[in-house]
Length: 425
Image 1 (cartoon, helix red, strand yellow):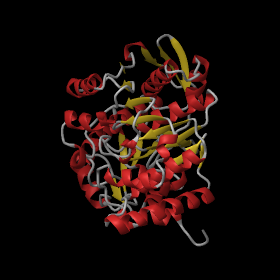
Image 2 (image 1 turned 135 degrees about the horizontal axis):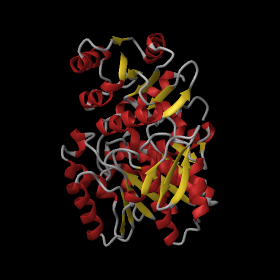
Image 3 (image 1 turned 30 degrees about the vertical axis):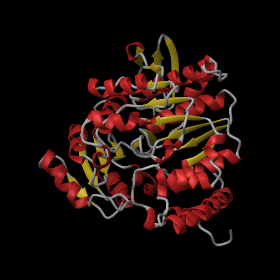
Image 4 (image 1 turned 90 degrees about the vertical axis):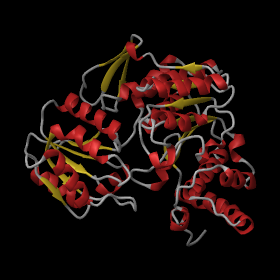
């Protein structure tokens, strides 16, 4: 293993292109001995809240005494975050060892079939192999892109399928209507596997999910959001009531109790399938859950600094709601960076009423929108009423935001999860 860099191999530019389809991952995993068959899964798809919901479910299962694998993307601070067992990142030596094993089969596959697995397919294979070697009782697995043709959809019979809130995202791959996107996300539904789904904003999208569950003869469970009451933040926690029970979460966003309710229902479905998950474990798991960069207050001195991975209009809506809820009318200096294929104009529209200034930078990603182009879009929205500046990178953006802020300000960095790790906060 000396000299082998697993991250450099997985991130090789030659196979970074997104190519939906299951043929390559099926062949790769078959060559590896089908590690997924030695695992049991909670499979989670959706547009918004996937990561937080996965974190809540994994925390509940770990609190209940299980050995829990967690596969999510993208990472925030370091690559190894994407593959965790009981909250611990995959160790460097294990990442190298497992990736070498996967590489052997991937290169043999490329030599015989002429096509190498993609970056995410390699990641999926590494994760499943590692979780199998670690003898995980259950794996909480987040879909990478879409659902139906995502490489994680080699899971044949999940313990439960979870579909979070849907929105228009990755429309070039998934379709440009809520129904089309719902069809792709509901592609994870399997015959006999129960489904827990967010009550979608668009009735047409909800009908698609209901239809998929009916076609698979799968039980469909939907959280009772009418019983959900979000309470004001108390110190460092957000209390909420769900079905008359009081819970607390360290994830402060006003939308997080809804994600928690989805996780609570998923845990109860698992309990009904024989998993030993009591209500005390559910409450404690919700209270203990951590998920970085989702309305995370990373510092308060000299003023609050919030980082949020919201990267589409729906994410911007709930970010604005949370800023109003937690910080009232305090002015916000936004550090904004986005990918060019996002609906960034709608994102700007949602947060602009809160802004005292914008500082624009490009995220460290080939799909990044240039800071100058983002600044033009913001000025079209706010005119001359709000200062809009561009800087070379995210470090400079944060430094400039601190200069523009007043003692009463809040600084909020948002727009792309790819930006958060480069902030160095």
